[in-house]
Image 1 (spheres, rainbow, N blue to C red):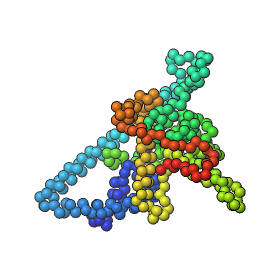
Image 2: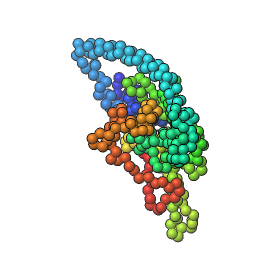
Image 3: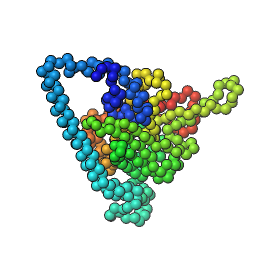
Image 4: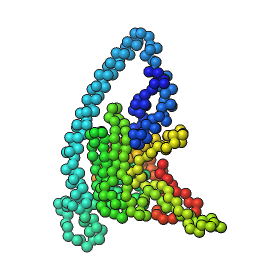
Length: 345
């Protein structure tokens, strides 16, 4: 293969796991933006076989045949793994249903009296387990960094989180079920991931989030800034500006490529990749950790602390809390002149 004929499909499959948290069109733009950077590297290795001595070339060709046989077996492995995951997903469902009913006070466990005890705190918990999902998510390092103090009031209305396997296209969908609340009209917020399982780790092809229908003045992902007009200005009204702000609910947005490809310098590409990696990391964390082991995350048993004070989850991930805190502005309304708003990158 020549340097000039490097196909986009080959480049596409080599992108980082979350590099496709874009629409198909936007993903193609990103691929094209990165293509030139990889062509030179690919060209350096394309003629290796031709340059080998004949005997060594024959051995390498035979090794490629062995690799092909391995790849066929691997394809069968992925197929059987998907079938096994589907089987156990059905077996998990009754347990998730019982968990949902107990958390939301639909079902009571044996030995718990339904009569009022006179203890205000105890009676408050009579309807299930308050703030179950909020607490579970805050105990996870990845999600804790995304949840602001303003988000907590809305996440208290979260009743359940579900993960649904997708067969065609392959992937999964996360569903966040909410009680009626004063923040948005949606009863269910979703985030869908389409993946390609042609490698040891799934490659994200596309991510789609829910458009949240916020009530007026309640949007948690935007900030309304009002600045006083300059002295002597004919316009005496405050200047209103809307900016993005830190919020867990930006998870339901999908990054988009700029219309002008010339804006895609190296730093912009790197920032976009970081955003998409983080987005996919959040989605897989919720699916594989929070939903599967929600009780352990709620109680904090899913997190251990090593001798350095770092939190280690049960899967062995070591995380440092030194930079856990970040400044937040909890005001939904106005900002003083000159005060910068911290944005989610």
